Image (cartoon, rainbow, N blue to C red):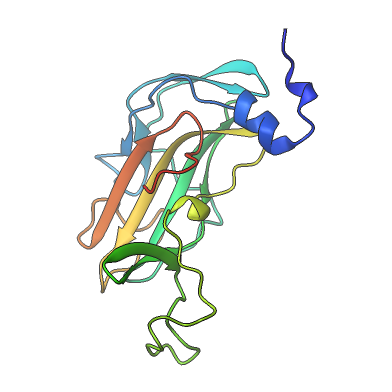
Length: 187
C-alpha cells in the first residue's frame, strides 16, 4: 500500500494527498454578493485523510486579500483545512496582453513605467506567459483548494475583496470547482 510519506517534496505530497472529491458549486451569495456560497457539501482530503465541508453561505473573503485596479485580473482560491476552517488565498494580479495575434498573460505592471505611463509595449525584460497558471495562489500544505474565483475588472472599475460585489457593474467573476489547482489550463 502506498504512503504519502515516501514523497519527500511537499508539492508532490500535497498534489496527491490534498484533493477535493466533489463539485462545491462555488458562486457568490445572492443576498450579500460580496461573499461566497457553495451549493453542495463536499468531501476533501488533507494529507490523505477525508474530511467533509458543509454547504457555505455568505463566506467572507479572508483578511489580507488586497484590491485590484482597473483592467486587472486575479485568482482567489477557496481553501479548507482539516478542521474545516475556510479561507481565501489571493494570487498575483495580472493582465491580458495581445502580441502578434496571440493572447499572453503578464504581471500587472507589464508595459508601465514608474510614472504610470505606457512604455514600449514589448519591453525586453518582460516574460509573457501563455497560461494563467503562474498567477494562481499558492495553497499551504495544510489546506485543500475547493474552488477558484477569477475576478476581472473593466477599464474603470476596481475590486476590493469583501467590499465590492462580485456581480457589480465592471466586475466579471468566474467560478471554478477544482479537485486541485490546474497545471496547464489557461483559465
